[in-house]
Image (spheres, helix red, strand yellow):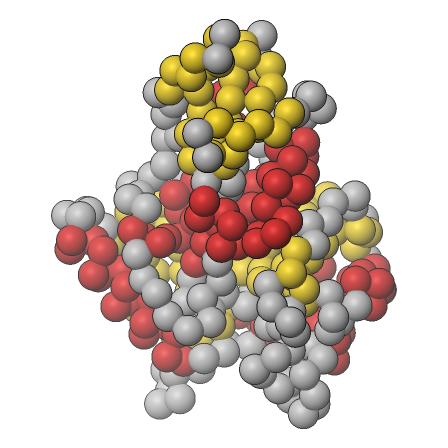
Length: 315
């Protein structure tokens, strides 16, 4: 066992706000295990101190709230050099900024939690879907982890923006890559079913212009180990039912998403617990054959958004 101090990234406060410490502890417990944690402030910086076996340190370095890991001996901090073995430069995730972008730290948390519950541990074999992927933050995180992924987004501009971002960062970082375009089905002027394939370092992602309620057709029923999504918070967007509550849309989506999951597949969803309520959200997916697992990470974003995370497993 090694005495270590984990420096909590100030960037995590932008994702979790006043609940940063609580969520850091929950992510640690879920992804690393049951170890005693002590919060300590050293030189104005916040640390979580614990004892860990050395083989846990590389997994620890991938937790969303971690900025650095130090050995701790008689009050002396010594930084540890740990290889997170990420595939692409961090700019592919953090570089692009746009309105409505899911916080990158939260997205990494969702991925870490999903992987902790996933029975398939070989990331090269894992397939991930984000059925409401926006401009692809989850997809880029998946690529950094070495996970093959697909995303669906109903905004046709998102697919075009994804291509622009990919071209920008591959050029800037001289990243060898391959970009392909095509259609699921027939080509059309509305770009419905249009997709962009992006491959780098042997890992592929695909973003498709389409509706999450038709995910089975868009993916041709290809089974997924993980479904991870940050669904709309019901503040800026109306659903097709002219309501801000996404439950009606999720009732259409849930059977599709459940059908795409492998047996024991995992679904991780970030949502605004004001709308829908946690129990309502779980009930929709239970009706589709999924069961809620013991994990939550409630944290206030604003007066109208209190974000939480629900994890479900296919029965």
